[in-house]
Length: 418
Length: 193
Image 1 (cartoon, each protein chain N blue to C red):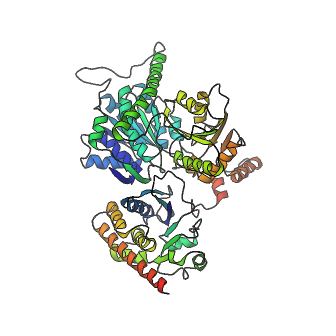
Image 2: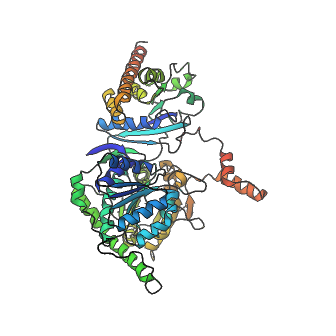
Image 3: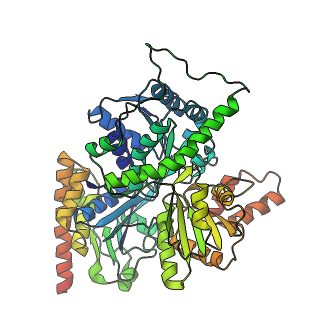
């Protein structure tokens, strides 16, 4: 049924259709509306049986999800930003124990300086934790990916993060097609745990493993992620057959056939990118394509290579930044391109909620197509205030806290339109 | 694509207005996207929300920099924020005020735009009468329906009922209808003048 609702509401209702039995909730923007929505559905009896547990921290949220999942319950939680960092130890445990928890990460920057706006720093900080990480490009995809995530995670017995851009998607009202309970029930069978804590057949979970087998256990986690590389597109195809929508999968290409330049990106910026690229193709004849990565973990090396090998250059546009190196996604894309002689550019954009506009993207893509971009650049970086701070630091040892200095240089921002 | 920017202050329902506008457009079978200028949820602080309406899927996610429509929920913002930034020459402007564009010191803006697309409506007064609270957001949507004809009053009423229930919904529906009539009369007077 077509509805005009907030992205968070769409995800809450979609998760509810998956019949989770335990939901652990701890509020943090921009994720809060999702668990609030689920709380309402549990309280009203729409989602039953389900235990909605208000925990005391994100660390508790993931720990309770681990316990619930180990006891055989379909378990869900959601978080963002510092919340994800605070639960990090338990995040690794969930995957190490092979528990198919599904978690929404409403992507948000990480402080300091404190910032509640969107970028991908939170999810990227956990890219090596053994969870599958799927990125939604729009709210319909966010809704659909949760249904696919439960199926994928439970088949392979591993946890799945569904990453959606905080505010840009979570707080956007747009049209979504909400499936029926019967449709979801037909697609997602009841949870059949691979391992379960049962008082009648006692086992212990979480053994200490020494050097004799630790590497093998870790290798098996990798082997499972490689299995996921096959299952993710199969599940997306099965989903399309039942629901009539082509969402999910490993990667998604636009105008790749004749593209000399391909822009690689994740998440909601793909929409603005596609608009920009279509304008540039129409107005300037620039042969630019776009490659969206939906599955960041497992990273689809072969699919990325296949999509990019016909191009002359690749621009990785990323909302994350490895300080001291540059791109996070770029490193993985380069690995996919080993041995190919493509020119590669990393463009860091949208950090801390900086708007990514068509105008800035078009300017950057013109430079890229002419090979005038530096290997690493920052879209719309305000060089003026950066230079001023550098001069201040060079002149005075005690030049004051950086964030406060920059804000003072900028003056009031409340009067800015965007 | 029709792009609407709504300016107001935290607590005035700026974000809800954009959301309701998107629901009204959806009700009329159109695609719509509403989103806030994220994060400024402090009561009284300047807040901006956006709505795009189109006949096909909307993929663009940038803030609205060149609006076709401006709705200003709080006239004190006129002297603090450059609300007219990027407004298209043939754009619509609806301001919550008892005063005219000239009286608000906006004669210059009025000269540069089409007079039949500019209106003020005392939305706070209308809201106080119907709701007992100075919440001008839904009221202005009624006024916008009259000013532009781009959404219908029944679609606005549907959106109000989707967002609110009970007496709040009833009061807002009545207030939106009054604002609709007020702006309609204004337009008729302008046409005769």
